[in-house]
Amino acid sequence: MKKSNWPLIILSGAVSAVVALLFAPKSGKELRSDIKKKATETKDSMQTGKDHLVSDFKQSYFEAADEVEKELAHLDDRQRELNETITSIEQDLKH
Image (cartoon, rainbow, N blue to C red):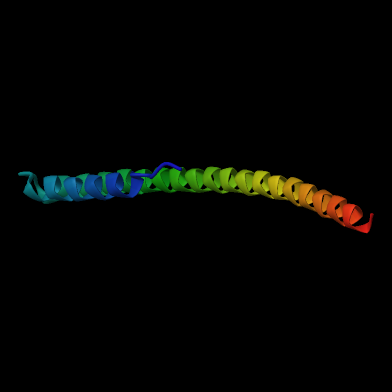
């Protein structure tokens, strides 16, 4: 399972945007406009990040479910083999 870097990417992008806006020589109106634009971009970026995290989680969940299902099938086969062996030993002991 791969590790997702989306939260770190989103956080560093938001921090960079705020620092850039605060140190930019602009008027109040321009700064408010830029802040609104960056806030919208950050919101969109966070939504995209959330969508990626949900997608990664679903994929990981289904991969894990498949692995569990395969392991259960393997254990069922192994249990069947052991039961056959026990039955065979019991029959040998009866004779």
